[in-house]
Image (tube, one colour):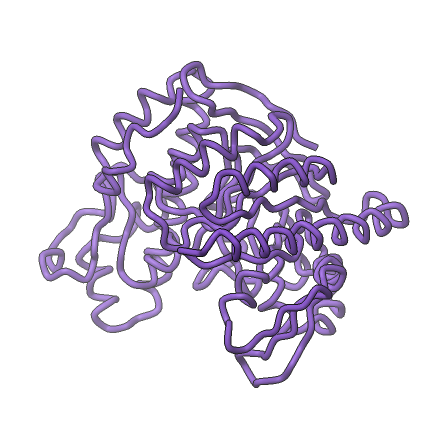
Length: 383
């Protein structure tokens, strides 16, 4: 299922391949967020042209809209959105638990109220696996609870214990399905929670390893904690996870956060940042962020990024794209979203090359020097 191809000489980074029912995924990889079965403003053909190999969709949102009956009509989410590559679906737990006034948590699961029409629904761990089975997910995530930051230790511990019990139930129903269907069901990853408490993170890993999942995700980060604390938790937790299985950091993040995570040994990432920022007029470039709405770009004939070979940069200028945003024209949102995803994917390609050459430390240093970003997170990698 997962094969390590190369390891960096001075960091914990590695390249690898994950085999799924819908093809191979080369790691490290970034997964664009197709929350509702679409990466906003972009088509599946756009994603293929960029070089994207795997996307992420959301169980909660797809369950509510368009609903499972409609997706069943098409056979799978892949067919529904005309994307035949791998799909990872998260459990929807983060969305449910972020609506504290609209849900009730019990041992059996979570009852919640739809943010769309107020209707009431219930998710058990077994339900969530079943929904993702209907979607045809290649990689599934179990129902879990993500605690807020900051959280008292007792609160984080109680939440973690519930998440671990739900993980066991999810694995049990998934295993039964696999026995029946064999190759016609996706993989189920485990999720490491525990808030900002390292001993809880260690306990979570030990229990999940007993249950034995084919891959492991680190959840509950990038929820407001300082960057240094996030790196400390990542470094500690990644060290505990098995080397021969993929490691996924959920909801992270910025280019520098991803680069730091890869150097610490992570393989998979997702975040709304490239597309959401693109729709709001912010471009990621080799020299840092660029706000295209600024008046200084009105007459600028340069591409968004002179070092970029994406469709946007090969065909349109900063001045024209700024004009589109001043009109609230959808094409502007589309062009910057496309560029930002290309930037992220191309960054992953460059990182893979640096790992294969054993030069990630040098690449990371150059990137940080050129890129305007979270400088306080620099040089935190544990050798």
